[in-house]
Image (cartoon, rainbow, N blue to C red; front, side):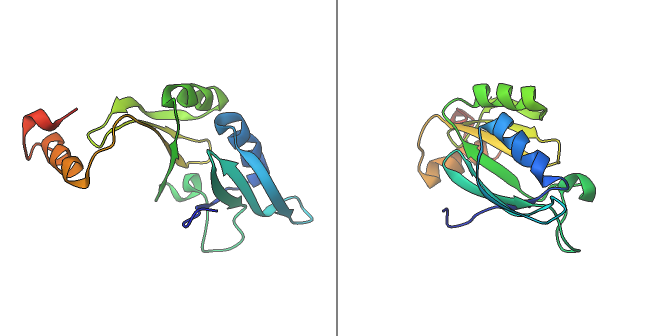
Length: 150
């Protein structure tokens, strides 16, 4: 398991498990369900990482579409983000950002799933030092060497 594991909440989490399998190739590792079918806890393997999910059970958590905002993005490191983007859109995700070369060395695309969660699909193109990322980032924001963007 990863050192930090996202735990997302979705009204109708059972449908979300099936959706994530279709959109991202997720595999359900296990599920603990209530007698009424709501998922108390489920774990999925997505791109060699673990994501926990379940139906909200109280006042503390809910899904983004109920709250009207998303407070975190779920980043997937993939070999071909254009292919994953096409699969996710075919499954029902909305494109937030098409594949775009970024200053930090990745090509990034983003989708919003039907439950409101944002997934950032990253294909790494080049490894950069933190100093080089900072330099390119400043240039991209208009605060540095214009040759830094790549």
